[in-house]
Length: 380
Image 1: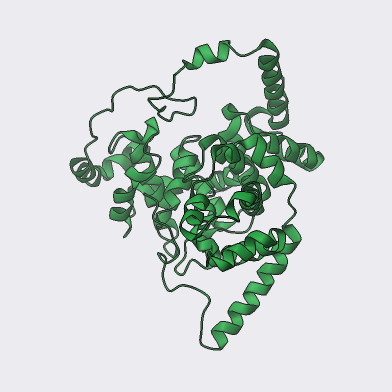
Image 2: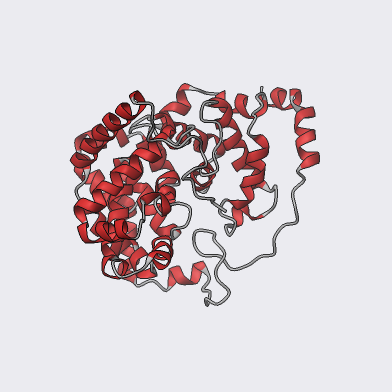
């Protein structure tokens, strides 16, 4: 059947291939263990050598950890739901320590609910990619080269990685035409494609935006960015309550969260943060929800507090978009983030924001911007 579908769409695919022939394959360069190009200034160590050079006790510890995870998941994820029901605190603790990279794609699908969505909608993704057209296709083609440009999978112009990214984003823009396509979505889809197939990545994107497990994220990308505005309001209030000196300084310098935090929420830290940190945040995000984004943001501000409170406007904006390397180490930042309690207050602030927004709409004003670009940083 798949062959028949491809044959019936041969003409359409020929047009695509004619217009978007793959560019030359980039020359081979040293990459890190995640597939990102290493800086030329950094001495490189082959992956197999670095692995062999690990202390024996560290290798044994990693192997033991991997065995625990495999037992927890079961073959193909068969034991996952049962284990989560029996020992939720154990699962939470292990996820916070980081999912083994070789299991990350499977575990992300299990904790997001996307595996169930795929099983219930067999053939839908292929239908969306091959049969449907999207008004966002040119926008997607324009943006795909900006998504993880230093990763080998996405480097070749119109190569396999960029085509997979195009397919996922195009399929989602058809699946949910109310959301369509917004630039920041490329970083979500791109990150997922590094750990799973196109179809798996598509359904995980659906699970996130439609809310298979946690609150739906689609409001981050709808016209007016309604959920972005809510999150920025909540963050602003939390900064003033938990870091009052810094909150007062932000007010004095006329700094608001839209100047530095929009992309935290829109890309869930996958845009400009170190990849190992982004992965650890995503592990927790998929299991615990968006509260980890607030926790990490507050932890960053807390860690850099003493420097930030002394900076004038221009330097403050720069610092909030370029945190120091030591602040971005997962084993330093995440324990600090986990210690911050926000769940109850976030719910109170959500209700408060909705009441304010309702009052503003009834009075003929609005707390929301009028389009999807206002407040959205350019991710390029």
